Length: 285
Length: 285
Image (cartoon, rainbow over all chains, first blue to last red; front, side, top):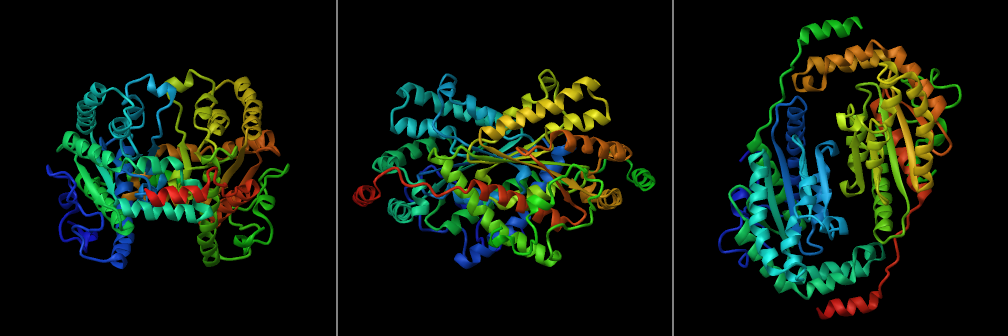
């Protein structure tokens, strides 16, 4: 662990990685691996942002001169109001927008439905040198699709294997994949949705359908368990991030991103031109 | 002018709009319309960011419920090192990434060259509710294309009219278009490029081709004059932003964005559901 990781007693990649036990034992109120409180966490987040910003710029620079074959993909999945938007705004949003490719996946369009479920995903995979962020993803096709029976059972079944192979190909081609489930409790969701109903400037964020999904909470949790059991691989592991504390969830996702970038360890590329000669040319121009 | 505009003696939209005299008289060192210095400008920028953030969220919310037919498009053009990247990072980067669609246009690909020059532009126009940002744009097709004779003279000639009509259609369909040329002096460019050569971590930003373009400075300025004369319309005016002072250029572009959003004046949408009934449903869930 590097400098920015002050406050972490164990690496986030270790303590948050989903185990074969699933996530039933993960407390959404907990802050695993981090010994600080909210005020420390907010400070750690700010410090980490500077490191993340530099690593991102290095990765981008590396790509710009054709040396990088690497990219990062952050996949965000969660129940409504768990804080995906806050991650995008406060973790991803702290990085130069030029290095970010954000894709928000909604219900598939009629056109998308006429292709395999991974067709629209492939199109939005990050380019080399970029940090891609999926706000929802191909996992909707085995989550809501399973809970709501939007596809036949055999088709859902086929998808787990297809996802594993698809992600393996991406990883082999140089993409680090970080899959995050933001884990809030059912009570916390009720509180957050109620807040949206209480504030007129948040009414647009509320949708009566949110309660319909909420009523299927246990089915969703079971669908997540299956997702973890079937698609958490060494190539592309799942992380369950307790998210009742927004500050912790943001810090933890930042830490996962930092670990991926440090693993890539992008270097400032060396000039592929004669620096001295160029200085002369420039001075004379 | 609203609260955030403290420090401005005249609206940026008025003092920066290109006139029929062109921009030969615009001093790249000047800070038109703003009476403060750097320290004030940095403060004004931070204050403006909060306002911009809220206006962007309102615009996005408006769209989310199907009420907005509006979007904003910021077009950035400039000579190398004039600060486009800094605008993207420090002005656009302060806004929630979920509300931004950034497109960086490089030299057209073989595929793009087999279409009209506006084909790839149309594909990247911002969706409703979004702020689109073009880092370079269709104007390259009448700037470098003209200076470097990348297309026959009649074709370049055709493009001015095509651009005016294309932009008028976008404006009629609800897009506010803000076209910005960041205006630095030739000396300032030399200083900035030299800095890139002096710092190993900036070497990747330097390209020997930059000096080749620099040697054509006067041709580029003439090409810009023609662009302004032919394509600055009431529907989609050009603004020349003096950019030797980075803090001023950032503040000015922010002010232009704010003016466009205030002109749209997006409102928090009203709930299209029964708030009371939903509170009951949620409480029982």
